[in-house]
Length: 636
Image 1 (spheres, rainbow, N blue to C red):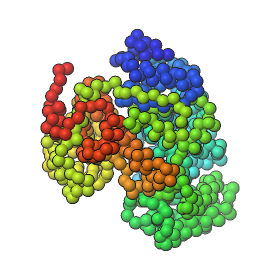
Image 2: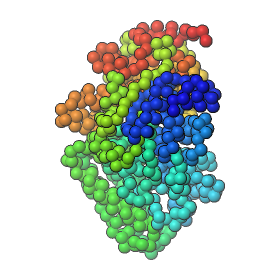
Image 3: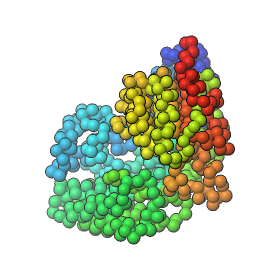
Image 4: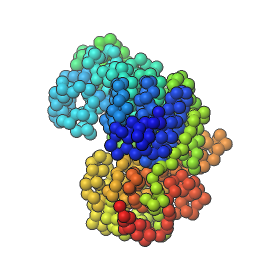
């Protein structure tokens, strides 16, 4: 197997620019052994190891059915359209490859038709988009909505013409034989390598009880890239939630069923209107949009209890009215089943004294989610692995804390997994410099953003922009962007002002921009070469102590006799910091400065845990030395 990775091996022969890397060869060897023995394997492969090829080549050579799960749809598309075909061609792989996304990524022909028939209540813009989509539905082969160029990706029409696990009619659908989801699943069933994403894999794992819920076929090898995301995503799917979107979807489907198929049951429209109104009233009762709050405390408020009771009554009315017309409309039958499920979930969410769960809610300007999340997914995940025989491989550039992988393996309950830590092959000693500047503002100091912007301005200007300013909060991100725009002539780009893809394109095209961003730019962003040579992080990324999920995990840790800070807060922050730091050096020729604006890194004992978990880089507290490092250009 490892011959593929030799200087004269199959990959070097077939792929232009392929260079043998010892850590990559070691990882490929470990993956080969794990597949042969059916063992679990956890690999941290530092940036630049080439981990994608290191698991793809052994997987394709194994002759087994393989599922590869990635952290996001963007990475999924990249893997399927770029990396997988490259390795498959190099190894002359003759098997079949498939891409499988969650069902809301495919056009639903039945929902498209229902909305076209019931068009009277739709806005003119939405109606014209439905007309365009009917044309596209005839042309498209796979129904993947990301390939539709005639309708904007953020259009309000998409939720109307795509299905979810909740509202899919399954085999009762009149257009079942033409369904794009069914076709995608059939292709996956017939393929040897299937590329999915973590959300789909875990959602599918949870709905395996219901026949049509199963999108992902059985496989012998499961590989998770960007595996550091798995514990948090798994906890979402192993919990329960009720969202305003689900409630409004039921109301919408009941209304469409009345207007198209069950026209003599006028009560249906009344019950749908009441459910939509109660849902909107409940959102208003939650007050200003917040990030995340404690549901236990929220449900103790009498006004919220009343609003939730009215919402449950509205669901009960939908249940009673729909029950009288069962069997007359597949759409109405499916809506009826969902009212039963959501009433059960609301009942469960009211039982706030159940131990072992975090109860939380979040709301934005329009929508809300009420949820309970298990504090540990270890037992559940261990059960899933034991039921699904085969090889399970987990890899990421950021799994270890203080050179140990136990934080990750404990959270997933995979205590018997083989583990491997591979350092990045990049030469951080000469390629990078870490600076924790003197004179930093103290946390929560008044006008901290203004002080920080003034301190960083000479460094950013000396580098002619080409800088990511990664923030730990939206408030600091907006404050810093405002300060930089007021004091600098360089282009300042701000996350949220346009899509992530467009922002990155603008950043690269400008050649001298400063991008001020928060969480979504800390990972999965790859800017190579001189376009990015300065990454600044505003402070150590500890999750807010007010976050109810974190609070509950810490309390649970305390009850189990652990140290909440050392066992929960610190490891989570270390892994997030490693992700942010990983944006700087993306290639062997990259060079740059990393600035972390937090004195705790050098003043607190736990700072050593962060430093030990980062690549071994020269350090300084002198911002002028950082300026000199950026100005110096070694001979190429």
